[in-house]
Image (cartoon, rainbow, N blue to C red):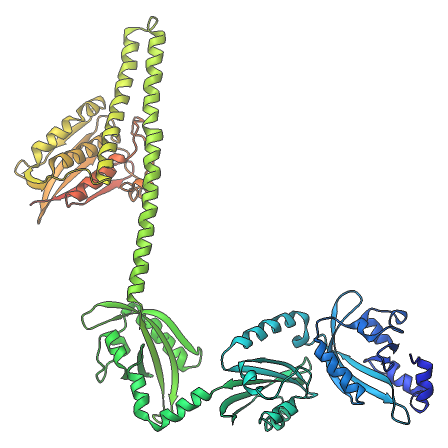
Length: 624
């Protein structure tokens, strides 16, 4: 191994001056490394030690591979050694690993040092720390790998990254394989030689100009029966000085051939426009149609005529947002617009379309035009709406199921618990209870049993209606007589609270309905009114004929219903237990059953209420 003293002896003229060391060590911020011809380090300056985090003792006497990161290819290092062993200067970028495991990047020039007879006696490495550059930052190197993978699979595209020292540092993409059928492209080789070999030698002057002027250049070149659109993009460092140029190659052979063919056959181009699978329309800046294809006419349902505007086919609810986007396109605020809008055909039918729009300046007409491409998404929209509706129905069914189980587990179980409890107490205390006490307990048990029976009947009727097991047998009959029978069924409850039920239904009024169902509706509404009326008040039942229907009303004077609860009255999934004016139990299931039965009889049910004053329930049934 040649040691430093031997090197200095053999190169006395070069290294005998202290000025050399002063210039290299004291005045330079670069990293200096001197190795013998086999790569063993014989000298490093203090800057090199600081960046590598190795001491002078740890570096001198070991091979330069101590700094290798292990993440650069073996081919890169073979090219380097071949160049410097041939006595040539090598310039390249090294990714090194410091002693603490961190990485740093160096822009390095390695110069062979020769004795008087031309033998290589050492290699002098002068490096600049370029770790700060984004393109070589460790985080960016991860994204570089991502982009390499991406570009590798992009059709008709390729990139070559060349340094200001004319070295290829990246080459990826499909186009590269087209250009390298005969000439191999390796990282670290001269980019100018490669461009000469593949017939793109004219790019070398352009690349030099890009480095000099720091500006993008675009060229179209035909070579090897291919047409390429080539962009030369300067990649500046933090000092805004380009040290790389990105050569972006796009194979536009197919496009060029199509363009040549289209230019020679204008009718073919017009046929492509007319028969496009999507609707295409051209508008002027004021929104008037200039031209459309047949697909657009079929999609929109309007054959283009003079003075037809976009406002004539776009739904009024979508017109202003669309016009706003057209203005933004014209002013360059946005490059393109895409959205789902509604259009209206001649039959006033509304249809959904997916619309894309961009602007174009027509030099021949000297005006700005809007290009619209539209596809029919009406069926997809309707399917989506149907899916949402089904989801809502399923959600409602789940709420119904939960409420149903709540009624079974709570509202039915509790009355029976009361009955069992009272009966056990009477049995245990029968000998000590007085007759009037036994009567009071039995009265409570009877009331609980009646309420439970009413709930059970409603529950069974509602269950039948949900399963489609209940039969609808409508006929034209008088309402007054049927209502009196239903009212008598709740008379005991009204008498207990001293509530008067005044039936003002006209004897002459008849309607078309199922008497069993409507009787259940009247019974439940009146029972509900009694439950929530104040003691000693009244319930007034009225009737009125409007056009082809009869409307019955049931007015009570009691608690009234809060506005926020009115919307929940007829929805089983949102029912909340509410006690009467004298703490009577209730679940609201009767009103749910009323709604079911009224709608089966082709009618409607609703309520008006004032909190603290009372409520009026209405329902309608057809006259015939």
